[in-house]
Length: 176
View (tube, rainbow, N blue to C red):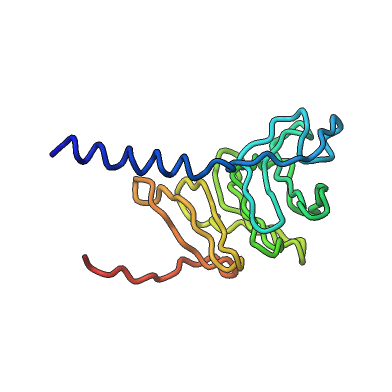
């Protein structure tokens, strides 16, 4: 019986890998030694893609900042009001329309989840009143909901909040 359970996942993994012969594909963006393109000599980490936009963290300015790349126009997008000198950014994400950028940031040893509205150029700390460590935010396609991990209960749990108010969503849990 044990052999049967081990064999089934291996078969489905092999079929999955064989069906993905064209994935992943390499993006053909030029290398820019000055750091004005997607490919640069800097340490670029945690990329996320949504629609035509790619967000990532890079040390291009000598600090860990969030960058936005527009795949249609094939260039970096300026984001006034997003990066702060005293915030170490990580794990950015972006709404599908490119208006909202979410990321985890550490300031003076405290981790928080930040939301930047590109239209109003405002940066908001969504978890400043949460007495917990937070990490790995993700934003919904329409920018209305943010999910992230929180240690508020002494373990890593998922929290889901309304992006506009920063308040937790009341999601009913059905019994099993």
